[in-house]
Length: 206
Image (cartoon, rainbow, N blue to C red):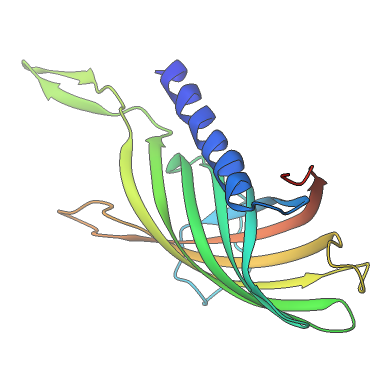
């Protein structure tokens, strides 16, 4: 089981990093976004920081569709993992359409609308009643789709550089569906990200 999970994770990371690289074409720098986040099951926009912390990590990239002096329209490709010790741990891959407005001061604000796939595994043992006794249930996990909506605040230290490093704080709300069709059809989540965007230099295609 653990080997299959590891293989699935490997495929997720390959798709995140290599497919967007081909789409970038003549670009000489590939942006890499890395963030650590706190995941919680809560109603979005009612609370900002929720304790206890349930840790997660996200790695991804992005490419621009349209770029102007102060704004840009872009697409992301991300893979993520979170561990909620009272509920489940999950692995996901998703993409977002985003818009960012960047000020002369280096501050930037943006919004992102996403859709992806999440596979969750229970963190507790589950049992079923079989042949007159309770036996441990094999956990194959659950397949879910998850739409997301995020608000982003960032800062570019090198204000005049196009490929400046970026520090960002992101409030991401997302829905896990279907969660429990006969009981709770969907589960709402909040991820609070603290991350950085860096650029990796590559050779341009001839």
